[in-house]
Image (cartoon, rainbow, N blue to C red; front, side, top):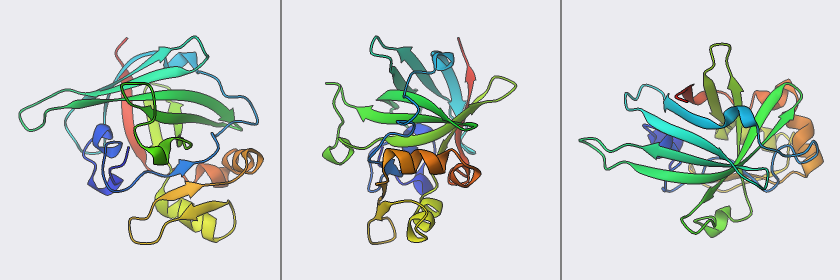
Length: 197
């Protein structure tokens, strides 16, 4: 989950190992309203990211503990060996905004990096009228600006590629993200998926 989005050609690349993380949060989004698993996401989805022509697949598996396990798969091709990532996912509705909290897992079911052990990656999502699933990562510049303006608590590491972490309490985080101002922190779609089955 650490590739800078500027260098991402696909969603797998956007969430794969590299020098910087997407915006993370110390507190899962939606804690005040109750995290759960949106069962409408269950199943397999085929998607693309930006102008990249390669397809990739995202499958949500319902779990007995009320979470979803998500498997992101990029098939191999002539230019790339492909790969996969696994996430534990919970969802919540804040106002009119639907959020997905993702925590990357390694093959043993644990976060692959100690920096992610206590953090989640918040994503905004929606299912369009045509059934397409659209995912948005928080925009690093917009979140950094909100932190500097005192709209939300967070840490910004120094440097051009410094990581951004939301540190707000559950009440503060949910209060902001349930508003249009909070929605505006999630600017461009990361990827769009169509249901396979």
